[in-house]
Amino acid sequence: MFLTDQLLLNFQRCHRQAFLEAYGDPNARGQVNDFLLKLGQDKQRFQQEVLSDRTVVQPNYPHHDWEAGAVATLDLMRQGTSVIRSGVLLSPKTEQFTLMTTPDLLIRRPGVSALGDWLYVPVDIKLSKRPKLEYQILSAYHAEVLSVVQGTSSEMAWLYLREKGWYSVDLPKVMPQMDELLTRLLDLLAHQVEPEVFIARNRCSMCVWFDHCYAIAQSQNHLSLLPGVTPSRYPVLQAHRLDTAAALAQSDPIQLHTKTGLGREVSSKLVSQAQAFVDDRPVFLTGSLGFCEINPLPTAPIELYFDIEAEPSLNLVYLHGVLLVDRQRKQEQFYPFLAKQPEEESQAWLELVNLFQRYPDAPIFHFCSYEVQTVARLAKLHGAPDRFFESVLPRFFDLHDWVTRTVSLPIESYTLKLIARWVGFEWRNSAANGAQAICWYSEWLETGNTEFLEDIVLYNEDDCRATYQVKDWLAQFLQEQLELNLSPLACGF
Ligand code: SF4
Image (cartoon, rainbow, N blue to C red; front, side, top):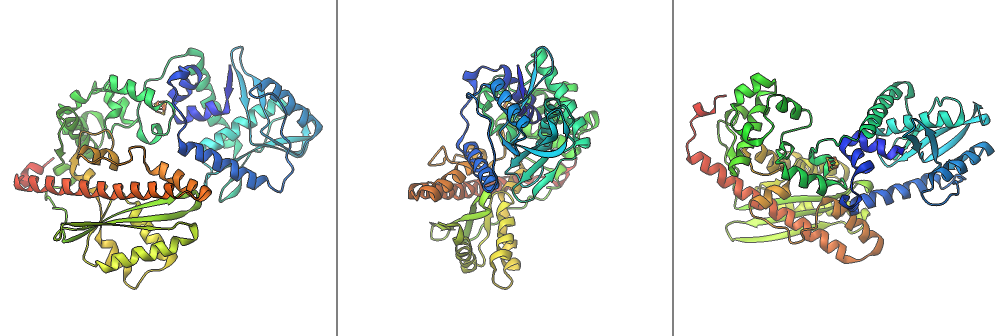
């Protein structure tokens, strides 16, 4: 079996993913989504840009015939080719496994090797802005396999990054970490013990095995479906036989904290989260979070609901959507300030500023901190009126922060989508999401087809409307808690 650099990358992200790639049922593997496809295309484009003024030679071999690829690559290396693109390097490890890797480039350098008076160093070209450890570990893997192929140890490996340019990987530091990972991966593959499923939204949501793993997690009522149960907390809970939501819901937060060493606030939130799950109801978070006083969310005659769409690879904010809610007139109006082309970012920004100034008393509701951070950044970049920061930023209310500080809900993640769906909101286009919007904008720029822009604006408006619905639900919920007249004594932890 080939133990590829891709498998090592998968293993770093999730052991189970590496296992499934090696032994999983291919029919259970999902499609690569549009966003990942776009990332792949962006990477290709970036590589073309980087290599546009270089002469590179690619080994010629039948598709997926890796042995032939390794022979063709070695031929080029023996000839002393200056730059080899997408070469294949193989090195037998055990009877069962052969190490295989495909660095983006192999660059010839002066030195002594089994090839002659030269040797090669591996280079990977990454879209990433920073040298992530997982990429450095892959560079060390390239270097390890390359050292066998060329008969001398590789003392150098490079990354070429989007903003930083050349980055030299510290091989003496990274190599031991790579060796340890490789040993564990070989062990996993040799013993074929399927790692337990663990749904961690940030890493699983883009994984091609998500549907397969999620179905298993649901059938097992797996505790990872409970928000707050992280990969590091899970074994602690297991060790105390608290590996079901029901067991956790019956726990006393103070005892949980004392027994497990988990923080007081974490313990309290885990218990209330489990209670919300088990009883299928919202659970108000009291004292442990310092929320003895129930603050009502502001309600004003005019309220603004705000959501941004951006294209990170272009460092561009291309849409500011604002839903204006006039509570007295019972009217709603949606304003999409759109940069149809990247150079129109500043114009869309100024239109947004005008709207904020036209309603100087309106609270501005948004979801997560991205909006407020982006507004502060764009004000510096494109300019803003005097006293903009003092007059506008204090009017921002982050509903994600409000929800997570005040209530546990019977949902699996505190995303706008899941919270809003739980309160009864539905997006008009159920396939839309932030990553998809990035793809749509890219397709609009490429094709000029306005349907992509229309899809984005519709999605953005629905995000604003979802925020509005969440706000109304939360305001009413907090009001009910206030009327229940919870005693400050009940807030003690
Ligand atoms: S869905 Fe999650 S648990 Fe399953 S393989 Fe992918 S990353 Fe791992």
